Length: 598
Image (tube, rainbow, N blue to C red; front, side, top):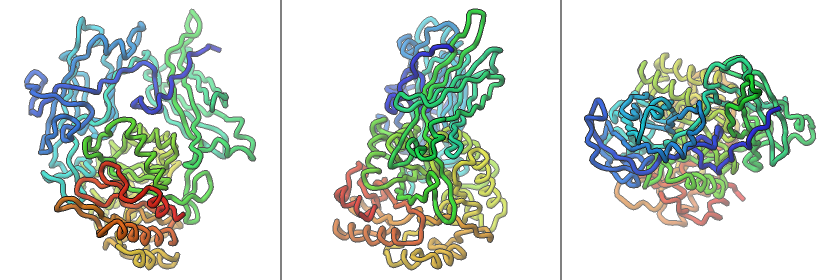
């Protein structure tokens, strides 16, 4: 068998796409030329300022800091020979791909004056093969990106981005244009374009679904190696007969029923298995390597049964916190890869074992650290506000791309396509809106049958595997009255919820787990007029007492888990456990005791 080079290193979350890594790539973030302008082509644009990519132009860190209605923005930088060298474009037959982590919302891209492609969707990655443009050039190439993001379009998935000029209530400054990394990557002509892992814990196998860049030539082989701390666990080699290749790798070590849990992933033991995928083609000269990529996976299962959330077939109580993924200097963009790691570390240090990233598909590097450090994640997305054929199409397309992007992360344990009836505000009365919510839930299960799906978080559930409820009662006594016994919970599920909405829009009640996925929201240390929370503490002692009262009531309830609102102060919302700069409002040890009850 052919000897392969060592797998690309895991790089500790530096690479923008952590589960499909290559050694040859070049970061294009940094200083770009910038303009706010309406134009049809780059030639019409006067680039009159500079911006630091990938921070959105509304953020202070971008160097622009314009928070009004931008609508359309333009970016420009030169690709130099040193960029191409850094990307590793040096072998005959290599292709050069220009990749974007996310651009909000409609993007068009030019290189060297040639239009290379367009993309729609503010949270999803995309890329273009720019090989022919680069090979035909004899000097630096001008790279130009246009981003169009209509601030008034209620049919566009926008999440917490405000449609009013200034942030109000629970909405924040908008994010326009590039807000995740931009990079170049050199790849062989035939390479792994997409990869999805699906562990089967009882079957002691891992399924790998691989999409190749092009239909394979005769004699093309795919090899998958799985290892842990240098120990080879499995190796499988198959002939690629189609562009989509599926193979199942048997992990013989897992056949020992008394020891199989040693390699399972959980927040308490976040074990990750390393993987290498190699593509080679037999020709007259023997086996020729085409591509080698590094990846990783986690062995774990998630399910719901008997009113309980199950992790690795054991009851698992979720202690979660609502995370807006918003920083004062960089807004929806992370300040750095290190900041994403620190965020996961801080959430764990506070005593949470789960996080609900709210109305945002978080940077994949955050999911990497959740995988590696041990934190379960509720996979959510930004919602639209309107219901129309266009809003249905746009959110559905983006949701499909996001599920495919994140399906291999062991940390992701639940899918949440809709929140609080956003975009389906009249689902209780409009059959079309109910069908849409049900359809999204079933589409999600079709893409990934291995995780629970919440059809509409908070209330008006149409087809949810977990019944999640939002309740901002200010006292523990009120929470105990609603959730303190199984009888009280059953009564609530059959009627009107605390927000004045029905909890369920279907009559056939199953034995789903019930969780309180938004509660608390106690404001403390407001600084400006307009700062607020769902209730207000007068001082640190009052803040601690209120937190203990609420958390004690929830832990003593008949619920299967909770999600406290929220991790940090965000904009005018001063209801965080931490301030906007991630400084705890009480000692970390105190907060951890309140959250865990220990």
